[in-house]
Length: 84
Image (cartoon, rainbow, N blue to C red; front, side):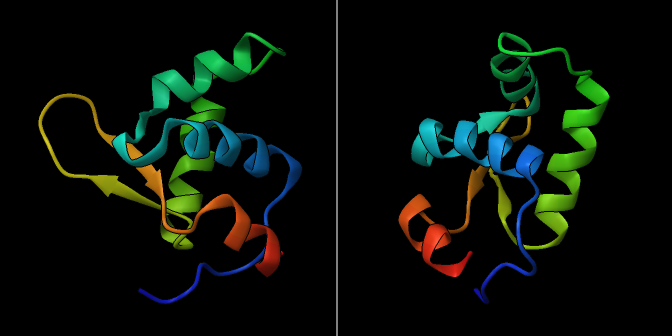
């Protein structure tokens, strides 16, 4: 897979941190939203829109399986830090 496009905004980096913590299992949008909402006020729709953008730019990919859609990072945090 090619490298993700563009850099990350502060909000996108916050989302990616939650995804990186989840590891290979991936994380659902609702879980990302809850993790961030525990720290500050944010709507689920905002998180959903950011996750969608991150997926389209190649930072995230869907984890196959049943149930809620889960996402995982296409780069580990160390490799992403070098790219940024």
